[in-house]
Image 1 (cartoon, rainbow, N blue to C red):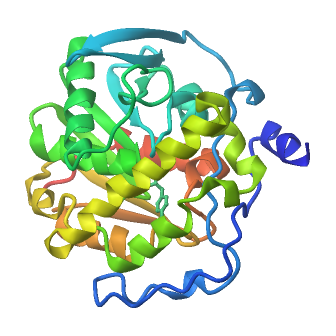
Image 2 (cartoon, rainbow, N blue to C red; image 1 turned 90 degrees about the vertical axis):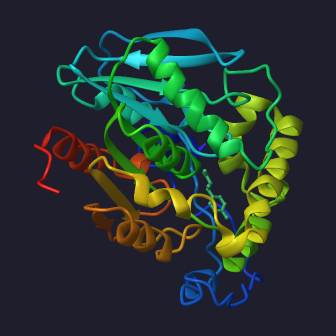
Length: 319
Ligand code: TYC
């Protein structure tokens, strides 16, 4: 109950996952220096919101399903601004669990904000979610095709974590449609160190009840546990590719102004990842949030939204 009370105030509780015995190997990859964050007992803080508990100013919010690439994709939409923005949730995430402070509070006069549930997640079920090696590519195609089908000619992307990876691929493959992009908690490769972290959080029965709750509310306990394990297996596949490549090769194709945000206390995505993205995405900006963890947009929504609105509203820099 204490956890719920905290969430009503929009301030998710801090640490939710104790795995003190995890000791990652140094993988000799770009992430090899980033080992210390696992040394303590605090590992995983990926708290999502429960929509019913949030209270934000409500404007013209609509929702619906749109048939795209053979599946019915659920989306929510808010605002009437000229600048269209798509929110891309994290693994197993959806608009309700991941983005209420953005959907409701980004400036509705400037932006039309669309949140989508990727196929197999949230309310875009069926189909049953699977994780073939091209699952990020498939999500990227679905995301862009959804926005195009909804009538948006050009739009920006806000992608969190897996949604950030999807956004990177979508922007690289569709430069003509993407206006600007913001990603946080995203990674372009999987290192052996990342693999250790994935395996450390594989078994959701070791998560705190408070952390499981929003996901179990969406999927039920059993399906959530199964799908999360399938996700861990899915993302682990990339470690076998050269350099653990998810989308390293696509980063040079990104042409849109890009902002990378990173929480310096993120326990699951080592800071080598945002720095790598910053180095390989031409003209990108990096904004660090010293107190931010993985869920920084939910924990610090005012700061996050302000940084994002400033970036989206700014004139494009000469590149
Ligand atoms: N990528 C996950 C997401 O989309 C977050 C995550 C990162 C989870 C690393 C575990 O070891 C991990 N929410």
